[in-house]
Amino acid sequence: MQPEQSSADALPPLELCRRLCDSMNMLATAGWREEAPKHDVHASLQGVLRWLDSAAGESRVRQVLIQLLRSDLPARLIDWLPELDFEAQKDVARLFGAILKLASSSGSERDIVEYIRNHNRILEELLDGCGDPEVFLYFAQMLRSCTVYPKLVKLLLDKGATSTLIDLARHDNFDVSSEAFASLRELLLTHKVVSSAYIEDHFKAFFETYNVLLQDEDYVTQRKTLRLLAEMLLDPSFMRVMNAYIAKVQYLQIHMNLLTDKSRCIRLEAFQLVKVFAANPYKTRPVHHILYKNKDRLQRVLMVLTDEDRMPESAASDINAVIGLLQVLDPPPPERTLRTSSSAMQVHALAVSPPVR
Image 1 (spheres, one colour):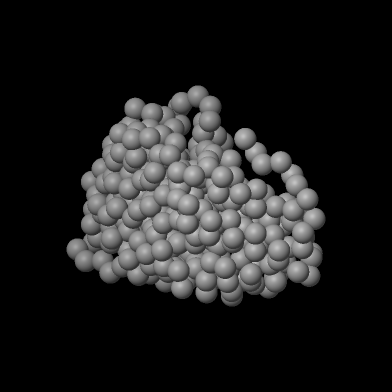
Image 2 (tube, one colour):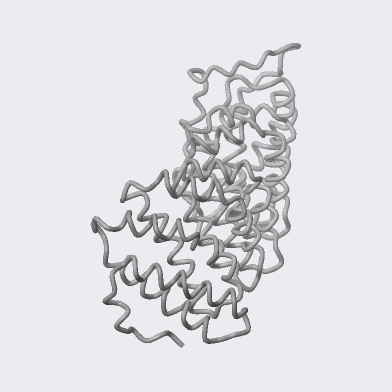
């Protein structure tokens, strides 16, 4: 049951913040079993939210945000979220998202970043909450709100958020796993310069964890993982990561094996990565050797793929291009040195094909 709109809505915004703070104090004193304080918290939450929703361009927004932070309300509300009722939980997530959004437009970005930096438990609780089947949706929403800011993305990455979210992407609860993967995608693609630098510095650990998802038996998880990997590696911001990835023969073998998957969509998604290995003019010797040794088999697999119905035109063009590269592939020389000059890497000419429906 939602609290009714009251005369409190006519109060000045700082008074609304004070009432929310007071209601949180009452809840902390009375305990989570008491319903009256919870109702007061929800009513106060809605009062603040209604003001924020109508306050776009208001000169007082920054003042209100600073008051919310000084009262430590974001951290306290996150602490209490699991004990609140369903509607109040939604409003806590809405308020947290509104604070982060309005901080950017009101010139309070530094304040919110410093607040979260100085409250280590906030990011930890958000990540932990993403795995709680009862409240994961709200914690995932709040976590994704943080990705608006590059500095918060870096804080999350440094806290091992990728490992946590990758583990949760294999959760038995489908909804938990889906939200975790959505959060992982936001974390990696919202601020690509930040995430690519992190992956480059933690290359081995990241891909040892991430590529476990590629070998997951769940079709949805496997396909989303392939798609996200292609989005990363074929983005210019991830050039150095791509160079390192396509130098590893063990990663080529994973994607070659997926070319024979029973699912046509998985085979097409796997091809998006195989073509990067094949189109690289400066292959490492192990990668060159595996491609040459298996080039006849790969051509047969790819020709079967082009014969399938509903093949996107761009995908068919890319497959034919890779078949042509394999046909003229010479055996590797006795020694070959990997060169990583970005000017020499032309594999981006083969773009990611649209997802197959």
